[in-house]
Image (cartoon, rainbow, N blue to C red; front, side):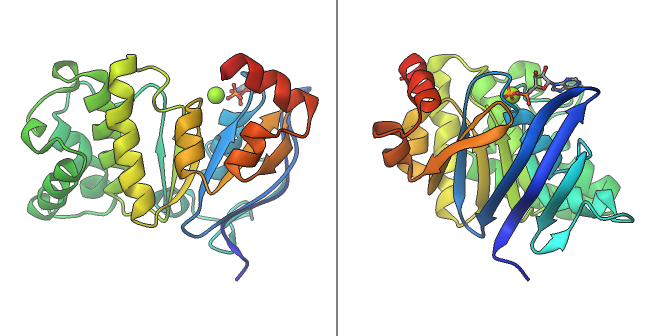
Length: 244
Ligand code: ADP
Ligand code: MG
C-alpha cells in the first residue's frame, strides 16, 4: 500500500507527436481535496482522463488505492466504478428522468434491483437538494440542477474518489454556488477529490493543496493561499493575473 488514494508516477501522454503530459508525479491522499488550475490547453483534462483511464497513458503509472491500474490485464470497468467523474457539460442522458439517470448504471453494471437503486437515488437526490426533481428530465432542469444530478449520479456507484473537470464553467454565474455547495458537502464528508476549476474562492476555501499545471507539467504546487498570494514562478503569476 502506498500513501495515496491516487498516485501518478512519471505520467506521460502523447497524442501522435504532441506530448500533452510530460512527466507528472502527483499523489492525492485519502480524503484530500486537490485543486488543479492552469491555462487552457495545459493538460488538465487529459490528466483527469488518464486517472480514470478514459485515456491510456503513454508511459508512467497510475495507482488507485495502491493498485497499478495502468498494468496490463486490469479490469477497466472495475477501476472506473471506483472513480466518479463529473464534466463541464453535464452529460446526462436526455431521454431519462433524473431518477433514471441515477439508477441506470447500478442496474446495468451491478445488477442492483430497481427498488434498491431507486431508494439510493432518492437519498442522493435529496443530498444534492433535488428531492422534488426525481421525475424531471434534464431539459426541465436548470444547468445547476443538471450538474447536481450529474454529481449524484456519479455517487451512485459509491466511488472512492471523485474527479471534477470544470464543473461550474458552463453555468450562469448565479447557479455556480449551488454546485459548489454540493462539492463543499462532499469534501466535508471526507471524499477524496481531484478538482480542475477556475473558482479560486473554492480553491482557497476547500483545497488542501493547489496544483498549477502548465505545458503538461506541474509547474507549481502548495497550500492554496500560498500559491495564490505568493506564487513563486512567473508562469503562475501571469496566469493568476489573468484570472483573479
Ligand atoms: P486543458 O484541460 O488544460 O485545457 P487538455 O488536456 O484538454 O487541456 O488539452 C491539452 C492539449 O492536448 C491541447 O493542446 C489539446 O488540443 C490536446 N488534446 C487533448 N485531447 C486530445 C486528443 N484526443 N487528440 C489530440 N489532441 C488532444
Ligand atoms: Mg480542460
